[in-house]
Length: 514
Ligand code: PHE
Ligand code: NA
Image 1 (cartoon, rainbow, N blue to C red):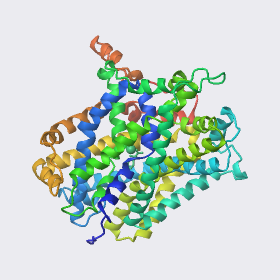
Image 2 (cartoon, rainbow, N blue to C red; image 1 turned 180 degrees about the vertical axis):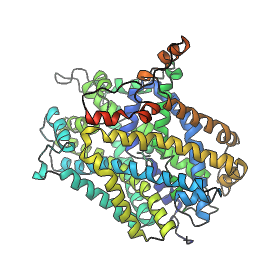
Image 3 (cartoon, protein in one colour; image 1 turned 45 degrees about the horizontal axis):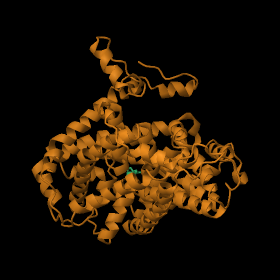
């Protein structure tokens, strides 16, 4: 373990890198889908409350932990957590966090590679003149390797390796490489986002035609923004909101701690963490909600969106809709869209690479080159199954275990470490050292009690998710003495008999309830 003096080049660089870490595919692909699937305006209150009571506290915790560990020359979660408590267990928890990053980055860079190649397809006019069906098939051929693009059967794998290679190269350049990408990528991303969002906000119903009789972008906007209070009592919506907040803020993985470990001891973290967090929320709530949903509703109508909301919309539907704006603006919009996604993706995947690199350095003294290359190899080993067996749903499993459950577990443990093992008084002092703002004292209390209790509730609710995710029905069968039927998506059901493997063996079998 050697003390390095490497640190962020400037405050702007730090904020952009941290905002780039948070702003990712989650803002543009995951948020709109979660919002639609959880009732549109019904989602937004639980979401904002989770941001205030779990998101912001976790940002405070992770930035504090990271800067504290960095003071001792530690730049990886195992070593950083170890500097806060002498109990060896925390080091292992840190190692667990590193593997979460690898699991998520594996499928994340795969999606990133789609956005990368779609920029070039748009520029090359691949989608010009194709029907909706053809564009949709183009995507499924790509991910299932049944297409013949460029005549190379495993072309998607090559693109994936190329994009991983770009990540490895940038990581090998150290912090200044990450900072440079963030300084170019973030402003462009926001610019592209604003261009598309303006289009989304101003589309109205002018596209209504024989082909698009139901077109009305405002239906989409109203659906997302008309608050509905009845869902506040539904744990399903709260769980989805909490899950989205964790994922979108990049908390619960250790990547923020590793970035924060390069902040100087007395440099502000209170205001900077809020700046990065609020940038993410601006991009998510204002831009993320103003593109896919309104534009799709602006052509196909809200009902179509409600039925088809999913991840594929970005790749299967958007290129077709853009074409409706004519060749020039259509292709321009396509480049903005996939370019935006690519920049959002890469600034996040770089962040997921740093915990591994930091660990290789802290533990073995590896150079940046060695660290970056070994990261690429690890990601490839973890990622190839998702790429090669996309159609069997490996992808969702990685997202569930890596991108959902692990975040909650890690976030709960680090909150306990910070508030109860390290101690809230010491922690609060750490957070406020060098602070450029006064954080309201109520946050001390929130961090100590509210956040850990809420995180525990989220965890327990995920453990025992009732059949069909229907809590109202679950509670009424329970109170009438008829027990509690677990859903196949509950953590307990998944742990006890992983229907995933059964489905692999017999894809036609429907997941059962234990
Ligand atoms: N926050 C990123 C997104 O919204 C994902 C991410 C999670 C990045 C964890 C880094 C670490 O897409
Ligand atoms: Na995000």
